[in-house]
Length: 505
Ligand code: TNX
Image (cartoon, protein in one colour):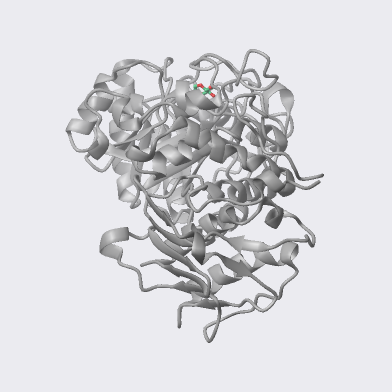
């Protein structure tokens, strides 16, 4: 099927929209059979990113696209201005003679490659040879992120997703310059990360029938987790591991009854109720266990953060909650990590280095505002805007609706610096879109809830506030239907979006 009306993208037709775009219609560059990719001399990272770009372009173009340091019309250079553009910023010049990317760090080259990918016709995403003129629109883009943290969260506790599924998800989200993947590893139903010295966590609570409604089994071995961390790092994504506590711990207590108040085993739970389980704040066994877990997770995780949950601890008294969190905070620091917690954590006095993740739907939150006033950073994940597990419409088969229905305009129509009084631009580390998996069983389910809403949150996290514009976003988003079809990514065909046609299966 041909798609002539949509064949060409303008220079700024990218998600997230770049900070500064200066088209030069006289300067288009066309990738041809002789095009080569030249990468920054002496940089293994640049060479690797060059190979990644070549691998993206080869199947549809059929061109050889050699990568080397000697020659090439597409240049990926590391001589950018870090003071101006930071690690993730880049400058992209497209002229009739070739394409030059300049960044201060490899992450910026990677971000630029995501931009270049979207500037090519959707047919570039095909797995096999396509007829095509592979033109890139001429001009200059100067781009850098608004926020350092642009995340997505995947809940692998309620339903498990395999390493290959998580990698595939990662590959899809980096197209939108997402740079953190938060893994919700433990919950009442299951424990999904192997911990040395506590084998029953995964042998029992990662075993058959531990997913919602008896789905499963599944857990990540230490080797799986390390493999994921490496794969993510190669794509400039930081893994943020979450061990949820003191609530959401039934699976741990099933495996180790000494973690309950009376030492008596509790029954496994595969329903979706929340707020009934708690670690015991007054028991030393609790902290011996948590120290082992924190030490091990910290050792396996090169990124700076360890997320300790802290949400919905309705089965923990306020006093116990405070005692518990005050015992756990120093443990995370002891193993060299910076704490992130759901914003309930901010009810306890936090060190400046701690990060509070706001997840509710209320218009104010005293604890989060106080934490911000004390110098802590905040990640914005308001459930009524960013929760990818909310239904799109009443008709949605997947998802929940406790935070309301979220269509694309709702996911896009807010600003993180206006969300909570006392939590302005400077207090924000960034934004994250959490995807809870109570109702999601397959990668296709995960994709259907993620697309097309994640691009909205990604744009809010990356693009300057002044570029925010629903009509523009909607029209740029429309171009992704034929891309996602070719990438094999399921998406909800939101009727608000004038989707471009094209892409036979
Ligand atoms: C609330 S958001 C929860 C999760 C559920 C989610 C479902 C948060 C910190 N806790 O336990 O999975 O709602 O949307």
